[in-house]
Image 1 (cartoon, rainbow, N blue to C red):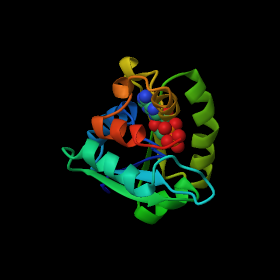
Image 2: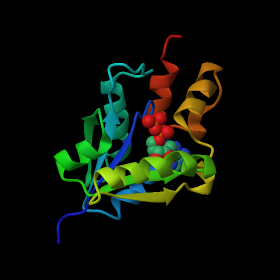
Image 3: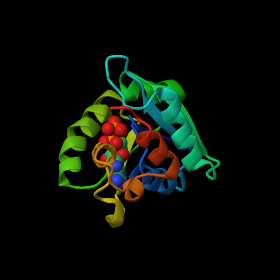
Length: 160
Ligand code: ADP
């Protein structure tokens, strides 16, 4: 049996408590979980790549089978390159499902050996998204419902 290697990809700008929940639960299902941070030069991020790496390292410190990598381009190409056989995604709502379904089907056409696995969001974290966390931070709201303490600090330090 080959090793189960899953990829959990996103911009993670910033990594949220919702992302952490999926990473923790996903890591229990596989041998290795690669958190793949999207770093597309054409895209504007609030946090630098290095800061995004640090937030994930800090949050996932206690989980030995998590590894962090940078990726750009097609996710299936990245999966094939690192010999991953699972794409891990989180589902918060029907909106996530409608967004994710064609992507998962297209990925399956392109790479039939890579299986997309969805985990339902924890109900207490269903409202959590990076964009909402940034909006709350912009208006000086309490971001502790969304973010780890270090992520709160990095987002709080951003100059608008
Ligand atoms: P990006 O960082 O590229 O914007 P997202 O943050 O939207 O990507 O999502 C990356 C993955 O994490 C997706 O599968 C998404 O559904 C999942 N996700 C995001 N927030 C949560 C949450 N609160 N609970 C569960 N899954 C989540």
